Amino acid sequence: EFQNRCCCQGEPTADYLVVFHGNIAVPEGGTVGEISLALSVDGTIIPATVMRVTPTVVQAYFNVGSSKNVQCYPGCCRNLSVVNSSADQASILVSNAVLDITRPDLVMTM
Image 1 (spheres, rainbow, N blue to C red):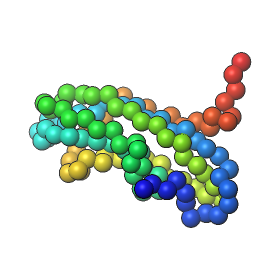
Image 2 (image 1 turned 90 degrees about the vertical axis):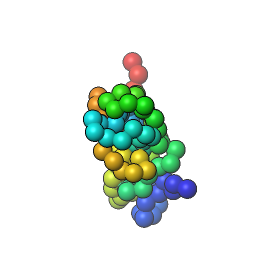
Image 3 (image 1 turned 45 degrees about the horizontal axis):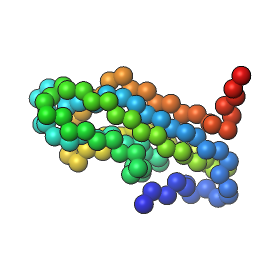
Image 4 (image 1 turned 90 degrees about the horizontal axis):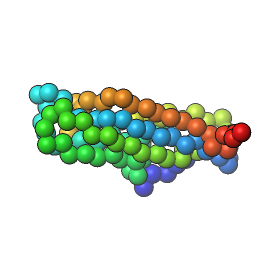
């Protein structure tokens, strides 16, 4: 199970909402089958963020998206990435990718 904590001590100082959207496909010359992406924090895939599709032909794009609250602790840095979590780690195509990181507690409305 993903533990949304790092090695730092103390109470979380901030929650960040991490949202990813993009289009993924099997590249020309690739093997058709399930492909997936996931959000990763400090090198650990967050299971609840795995985005899977199963194209039946190469270069057929599918839109995927996921979001997760990530906590930060005092004096601690987090490494966030979007990783290829496909079983065979084969190359995939990604286009029109958007990674949005916000702090909902700081959002102001007018």
